[in-house]
Structure formats: C-alpha cells, structure tokens
Amino acid sequence: MRCISKTLLFPDLCCFICMVVDSLRILMEMQADSVEPEKSDFLQPLDSEIQTWISKAFDMALEALENGEVPVGCLMVYNNEIIGKGRNEVNETKNATRHAEMVALDQVLDWCRFREKDPKEVCEQTVLYVTVEPCIMCAAALRLLHIPLVVYGCKNERFGGCGSVLDVSSDHIPHTGTSFKCIAGYKAEEAVEMLKTFYKQENPNAPKPKVRKDLISPPDGAVVIQVKRGPQDEESETIAPLS
Image (cartoon, rainbow, N blue to C red):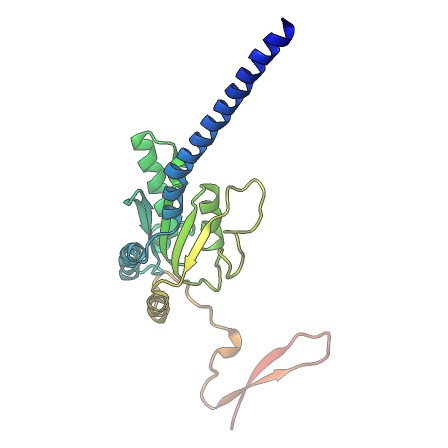
C-alpha cells in the first residue's frame, strides 16, 4: 500500500513543480517583453528626438546669453514631456550654484511634489538635454537624483564632471546615487561659439581689476628705477627724472 501511494503522489508532485517552473518562466518572459524594450528605447533616443530637444535647450542658452549669463541651457524630459528647464542664473541671483541644471532639477522636484509622484521613480526615467557638459557640482546632483541619461553639446574643459576633468558620471563612487550614461557632441560647435560670444563681451558683474603698483605710469620725463640692496631686502622704487 505504501508503494502504491508513493507512485501516485510522486508523479503529482513532479507535475506540480513543472507547472510552477513553467508559470515563472512565462511571467519572466512577459516582464521582459513589457519592460525591457521600453527601458532600452528610453536610454537610446532616436537622433530626431535628440535634435528636437537639444534645439530647445539651445533656446534656453540663447536666453541666458541675452541676459548676461554664461550661455548654458537645458531641459528635463520625462515620458516625452518637459518637466523642468533652466538656464544659468548665477549673475542674476548672485548665487554661484544656480547653474542651468540645478534650476531645472528644482523644477522637476516641484513637478513631482505638485502631482504627488515619487521623485526617484520620475528621475529614473528622465533624460537631461544640456548645451554644455555638466560641471562637477551638477554631475554630482544628477547622480544623486538617479538621472540615467545626459545628452550634451560641447565639452566643459575647465569644470566638466562627465569626463573632461572628473568622471562623476561613471566612476564607482559608493553611496552617491547611480552612475549615468552620456551622449556628447550634439551641436557642439554652436555651443562653443555661444560661449566665445559671451566671453568676448564685457561682463558687468565681473569684479573690477586691481591696478598693479609697478604698472602706474610715472610723471612725464621720468623713469622707474628698481633698487635691490641685498637678498634680504625688499625691492624699492624711486622715480628719477630723465633730465
């Protein structure tokens, strides 16, 4: 009787396990079909999409230039919708942290708060389009908020945080959010030309340069003679007439 019960129960158990395995496999395939294509499409936007969004970012950069700011502009795009945009506001606000990306990120957080959405979930599906490579500060903020993709124009050779100076975007930095992918070079020449235009013009917010003492012109008909009495002595200047 025991042998009969074993032969009856064991096949049933095997069938049950096979059914569970098949169900799990089907669920995994369904999840892969529904989630992965969306994710891959999201991280690999079409060239036409990039051109559309980056052009709008350049409109923001032009607005910055016209307002006496370093010409950088950006957009934050979520589900094909602009949920944040910004341009440099450093001179306007007298606040060195008000870069275009920081302004846009503030708008994204406000957008999430107003619609009662989880900022982390939204940011994980948001793409940043910006005219210039984010600086180290902005790259760190993007990383902390889990932005997965950044598309930018020209490199930022002085302060770039996506490889030009530091690689905040992809370096292994524990407990600092997640790394993000970068696509560079869209309308890079135009971005460089806008920066050149800004730096060629006079910046009314720049501090007044200090005039060096040794550059002050002496009275007419005189020359400046520098006298050194010894290695321990400071240099002294006397003005001697030419006649």
